[in-house]
Length: 260
Image (cartoon, rainbow, N blue to C red; front, top):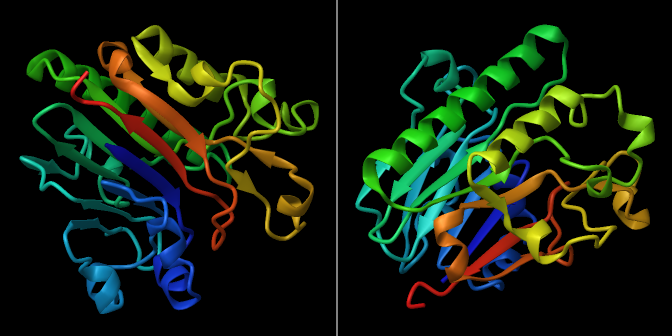
């Protein structure tokens, strides 16, 4: 099974400009998208309904053309949730789809950006904590392994961005943001790409468009797949796909062998 995750920075734009086929060339069994910036009814017909897949959309209720996530599944989930179930403020921006499958639970998440001042950074950190509490509850109550993916909006270690020293005081690389990823790992979730590419630098998933940073590979690795440790024996691979264009992010993938 292959799961692909991509922050598309506007799904209508990706589809309109011909980049939609690029992500499907990766042959996902499940495709998770973030920052779709649209309601389902606003999307082209070929994006709303992909033959052979169940499509799930969750859009922002806070404001139109903002945030939003989507999931396309070759096998329909047994159950779908689109809230964290704790506070409404975490649910109105359309940031979460949690899909329950027979073998595992998958959360597709567009985590908040901590920019625009202290209030927004506090919201991001509170969202982080609420999300970790939610997946821990699901893991405990269902006994199923957990996979979560998406744009986490934080680079974990210095190796995960091209210019760590210049960004030590910027959101996305603040100590308190990075500490949450430490907490996720301590709770029993593995950063699969880093585990399989330990020490390999220059591996990024986001580049600033305004400065043509992608041309120079001046980027950040802020998009992740995490799996609970009980699923690690079934992981076959994890990859970044910088050859797929269309967004300021590129897709990432996780390959699982559920028969192992």
